Image (tube, rainbow, N blue to C red):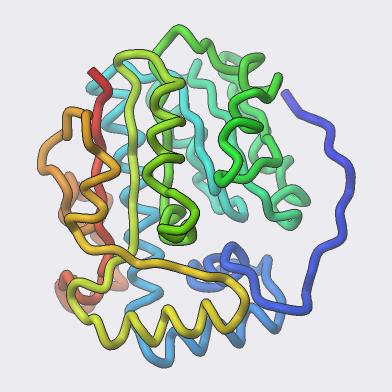
Length: 275
């Protein structure tokens, strides 16, 4: 399934977080200005490449766990970012071929490559919605959402490395609460969030780089991240640094010359089930 979208101009006058993330992951869908900003981040926090990779690995593991162990067959992935294979639907459909996934993002560059997100199995369905997490009402009212997802059956809400781009002034907890209120019992929240807990000085520098580039950020402590899961039943091992959440053999890579440390990863992750 595909969804028609109007073409939009891509702003290359300033760096964009999704394109910087693409650079961290070794992708090619970014511009020189994004590369420069990303390298500025790497200059103060060389672990950003590991952080991005571990964020992606967490998404893969959380998706498989929800599909295999909790019967989830539907996902709403907000802040999708530029497609990087395997995408969420490919991971989910490798476990349950009939999985359905709705992707949402507000970056026109993601829209440009959205067809990569439409390559579903014959049994499953995927679509892409151009939407902003800061306007959950518009997202939830989208006809494409109800066309692909059965809103009476459990849905996994995937918010990977997204909510640190929503400052407290934008009511991040209210946004997540509204999204979860919309979902039925048995649904899930899978969330990852960068943190300054292990190296506050470095992460203040990262904050300054993003903010000066026109993208306000707010990296949060473990207790602040835990607030997103209030009212949910957290899966073991609870709120954990990314590489420590249900590690498996696939998590290890030849790139890891040394064991990962919490300070290098600097990413809180968790999965909770709605009672």
